[in-house]
Image: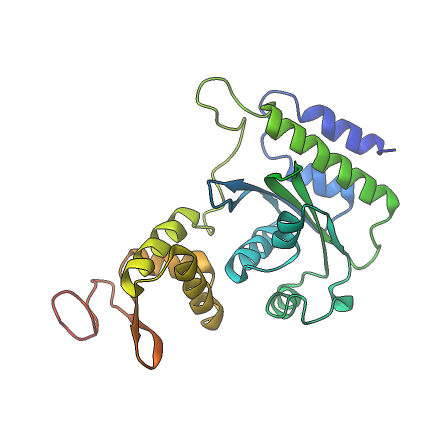
Length: 255
């Protein structure tokens, strides 16, 4: 049975103009943070919709940069991934994410996929505090919220007539640059002569190696401050000045 607080949250899902409900979700769940991420386009690119607080947005960006974690796993398997204590997770499960998440201050994560059968529309991520641990009531509430969000998204309850945009939905946080990631992936694909999937892997590898957010690196590629190139010894990137000059700039100037 869900709590009275979650009953109120679910009731407000169907009211006009919900605004940003993530703070209320976090409060009712007793969570360190909550994020709702939608899967967009044929490639089902994760687009953070609501995140609270900033730690949740940073964790979502980390998962997208690395391409691993409880969110991607929940989307892939269609089952909730419940890891309320990351210290107990085998390091080889998410070798890049666990140390990075610990550095961020994330102690535990529970992710609930939104979808029916093979259909995936998003994922609900709950950041767990080490103390007090999530109990049966919180898990029941989170599962009910995920089910309600799935029904609302698939049924169109959260959509406005006409343009089909989500009611009261703000723009994705400015530090998450998904459009730039798509554009940068295409540019890298051309630069290296590889598939889009391989180009995204190269972009992620560079972001991870340089310890920078994926969106930030993508912006550099789009602005031509960063170019990927291949030679027989492996992958290289050239850093360009703000005016586009650099080792491989079109006018041949050196940076």
